[in-house]
Image (cartoon, rainbow, N blue to C red; front, top):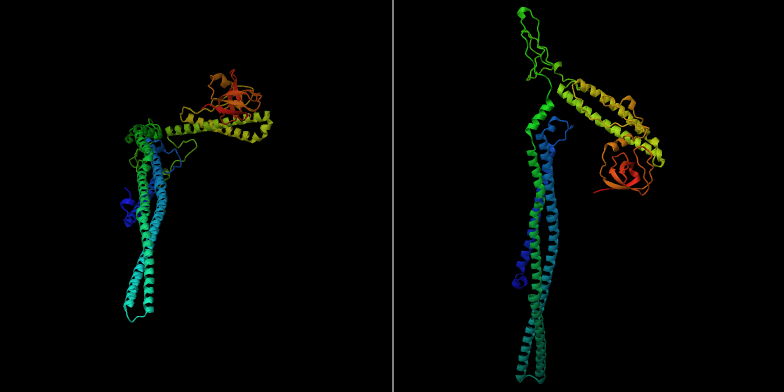
Length: 538
């Protein structure tokens, strides 16, 4: 069933219905846009909430940062921020796939509908114009026919009049004949106009208007189909991000299950344990016998307490003490010192151990950098076209100064740690000799270089290569490389290669400009990374 056949006479109804359909699309677009604004505001509020409670701390060493309950809360804030991102994605997709797309489609429908209605109006105007012509010819025919009848009656009356002359009779007959001829012409014209109008009316009601109505029906059905797709997109847009939102919620659940109250308690103990012994019992002082005051020496670090009935007890070791509103010098916080002597014994040992580990890591970094500079200088000396060795002098000198400074700090903190009763379990840095004679390194007892092992930055560093190869098993190749230039491999620890030679890569460049390779015969050594093209296994 179609509108052209069933609703051929319901132009006004069709026009009103199609207009109402377009207004429904506009209403839905407005609804989706407001939903988008809600999602955007919701996401913004969630982000602000996460930001508000996730203030960046000045230091990651805050005591509570290690607690699982605190870390779980930070994880929740992170997941909440990701959740806000998904709400923003929903808003973006709603705007792009519904609001913008439907708005553009709606404009096209409006223009198409306007075209069809204009065609219908033109057809209607054409039919009305033809009808006016028909009506005009009909009235003219009616008027002329009446005039012809009157002229015929007048001619007949004149012919019967005995007083009328022959000329009058002849004239009346001619007038009647002329009027009859004009009436016949008007009749023929009226018949032609009637035929034309009937033809156009048939075309109008059976062809033109049904075609326009069917086009409007197709337009309305396409509008309904597009709107239905918009309804589905409204749901699918959120369904699309539900898996990710589910992961965010799972992350929040996981954060809650990862909280370990026992572990948090142990961390609180570790962070705040002072290392002091509990105070011992006070001895009885018998003033009646004139015995001098004495106090227990059984407690470590317990202040001497005066038992005097006329004096206030001000030096007792109390776990809970009321804060005095009066400011006194004794209430000034202890001065923070470099050796952490202001801390309790246990906390002091931990801070010294932590500081010593940091120094050792920094020292290892400087030693590695010194080695790399030495290797680079050696390459520059043997291959001047690659660079000027003198350009590295300032860097080598600065690195040597840093190493000496860090050694001094390491020795100082090791001494303090020993005084505090620490074990001295520090991170040892990898020390290498700084000469090309393959001699072993000499270490001082405290783990630093002895005077005999003071590096000479002007020398290249390859002594450790041979030891590495002797101690390690043959590692599986991680790729291969092709030599672009010849390399003599004259320095200890390196390997010679010819242009075009293919070698197996055993160890990647660690930032010092050298790559460890192996030949098929088992020979291994280092080559300049810039001399080869490397392809790693996937």
